[in-house]
Length: 507
Image: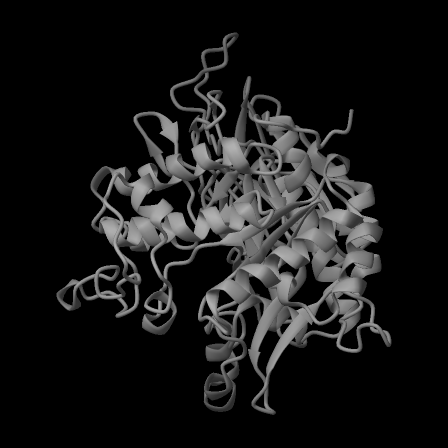
């Protein structure tokens, strides 16, 4: 039986199989290169295609939209029936999209209402003007919005989609005290999926670290864009990633308690390159303006091919070690916004060819990383629970109390998102692993020699290094990390009682 088999239930191991082979495939259902896209999917071994269908602003009549996305789903599933396709229901609605759709009788029936001959109402879906939200943000506490979400979800399920990205869920639930309304809609869609979905199961994510009510998670896994820290002392528009929180725990929709639910990272899009910022901001200002003056995927697409390959490798390793519950949705297809020619453009992973003349030629790099797998680096991962520990714990032999805060510092720090020589940094704070031991793992994007030491209690008053046998004060006597290859995974461990420091590296 395949690792990806499920029917009616999806144990965490199966869910992680799909997330470990995930891609962001935004609007692949509308792709003009779908045959070549399917070739790339099969070559790389992708099994979960996020954002494959959905509307932000409609481009065609609703019935035509669902006919189009179903045809695409049928073609993809004919090539690999195991693939999960994800549809999107976003935090935005437009009057012309909502009010052009008749409310089907089955929607009224699902909500226990008498059927009417009318279209959906935009005004009944959105927040009132005094709420101060976007004028076209849906308010899920409104019954009309619940009906609209349910309608869209059912039609995607009937079109062959088994997963849903629910967008910025904390925005449209602003009036939904206790998340009762969104929980109701998700429960209704789960019930419909159990009866009608391809494999009698649908799963949900949203941009959230946690959405737990009475101990139960409303989502199957959490999802967020990545967070960056710009690098200013290297040529080009360089940046590194930094961890932002963790995925919350709770009882999963499968009924199993999890300390941390799975987490999916992505390169997000929200408008492409900001031409005004790039023309008017200084170098330093631009570095801190979003991702060098644009959204994440447009920054990525704007780098040279070798740099894109290297950043995919870096992101994959960074995910594996910084969040052992985390996975990365490789960009297969993602909108780049409007280019200098006034036309909308799309990033595509495909190798550039006659079949895909606008490909960015990343498929070989992605295939190699997916073949290697996350487990190649998970053994060096930081703890899932972000437990710095050492709180009121002591050495059982001597009674010496262990420090609550231990920091790794040195010239390497800017390349992992921290300030150089900051002995009090939270970014490079070491995790407590028990018995007086501390550890920290990170990815060094650049080869070279970097100095480093351990600061106990987060000060420069009691430091330890591989170059000095006893504790010292100040910034002298630091050890050296010799990084031989770009994107090397480094794990440093430290024992407080013996001052022993060990370094393990994996490229």
